[in-house]
Length: 331
Ligand code: DGY
Image (cartoon, rainbow, N blue to C red; front, side):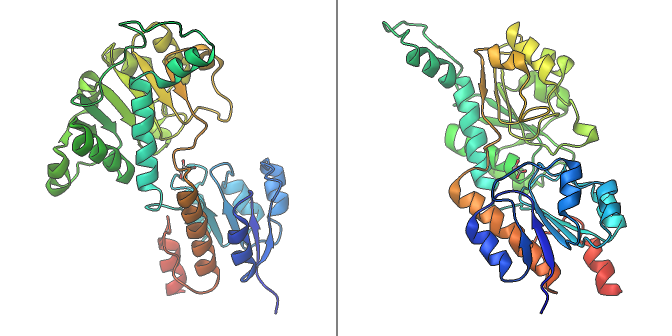
């Protein structure tokens, strides 16, 4: 029997690839080359499914070149690399990996915020350079996390996870801004207060970004927003590059218009704005917020679950555009 053909566009756990091979003829990418658009299109010849990461762009042109493609399964919760309306218009199911990474990503967001507030990267580099010769009363003094005001922009599952850690673990006052307000029963246990964006910027001691990237969130934090923040505030971005104007942020950090930033995501990553690399008051990590072994395994398995279900008549657990399934059911 001929098995359906799929592409696993990036290197992933061998166990996941082996499981996919029990259902499909799999072309994988163990050398983990990041395919450009032309190469991705070449590799998708004859494939009905694609296992992707946030690095592979699935747009209308690619979909038009591959009318046989039926499902694209992202091993990521974010899916700004997918043109969802284009997928839906062509009856291509798109899936992502929500929930399995929520707590791990919230852990990391909180850790990055703490590292930023307490100047951990900067002080560690100082120590490694051999510059630590004596204790000093004001050496690497930062700002307190406990008891301060935590601002969250984007109060989805991960944002709520960061808020829970702050409120319940560190006695932080939580304010947030989001497209829609949480239900009172979601706000109450963490004492979260919904505020407009201007209030959030003005009042947060530590602002954490956890909103999805879209045209409307592009440069949601730029020069004007940074100018509205407290000079003692920190900014942490675990969402997506492009939500922050990195050039404006570098300038604000250099001029100490905010105290510090923690960044796990960057505009045009894996490139990093060169000015950020030269600044001491920014903690930089390479897009690893979901990177615990257990969570990355869970993400890979969930992406595989989605592919397998979509191509073998099952119910994909986490569709982004479930209307495609409804259309197929009705057909
Ligand atoms: C996600 O899941 O969206 C993470 O950012 C990894 O890409």
